[in-house]
Length: 291
Image 1 (cartoon, rainbow, N blue to C red):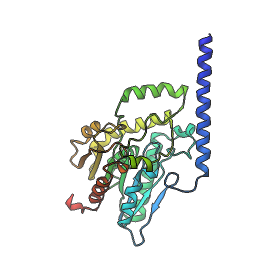
Image 2 (image 1 turned 30 degrees about the horizontal axis):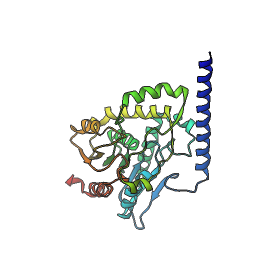
Image 3 (image 1 turned 30 degrees about the vertical axis):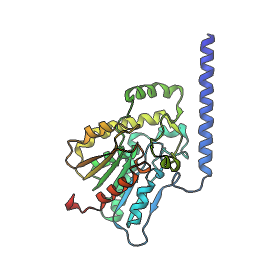
Image 4 (image 1 turned 90 degrees about the vertical axis):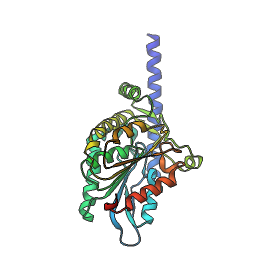
């Protein structure tokens, strides 16, 4: 009986700490001015934008900052670039409520953005996704909603202990619904680590299970993709399983899968960042007939 009471006390204590942390993070985020970590970014060139629009989707627990280096480069080259905030993935979304965004809701959200932009500009946009954003972009590509797709370090499985982490989250979500980020966004380069900041430092475990469901869905959709697709992966990715990415895309005729040997997960903030940006720009600007 004593052991049980002690265990319950510890569990309640942990949950109290996590709730206070979540509330503090939420309150702090609501006081911040508009920035790449808190607000959708719409970058409009000074002149009439080149066609088509480029939609960029950030990662799990990330923010538009995930994609800032590439977004600004493409904007400077004359494209309209839109980097929305993925629902429930920044600190302004209270951590205990992030599970309300189901896999279906995420897909509906992104599909609406792509369809609306298609109607507005008269052609389907290009789509760039990082990590979770690449998971979502995979499904949108299979639905034919983009004419050209870039996946940066796409997430389909964790790099380590994928099944164990999934099983642990399935149980722990009832005991401790919100936990600190168990893994940092991998960056090898010291300068990149100084610049990059995540959208939130907390993980909703039910939200993580939704991400798992999206990843399983995305894996099944890959063979349906017909649009040209560039996939860039970190050879030694500490977050997403890069070997799985190669397995999934190796038989897809429209895909080009290229490794980044000096970087970890956050490709746009690591040692290969300049080469990654240049490769994506080249892919986007290459005429359709030359792909």
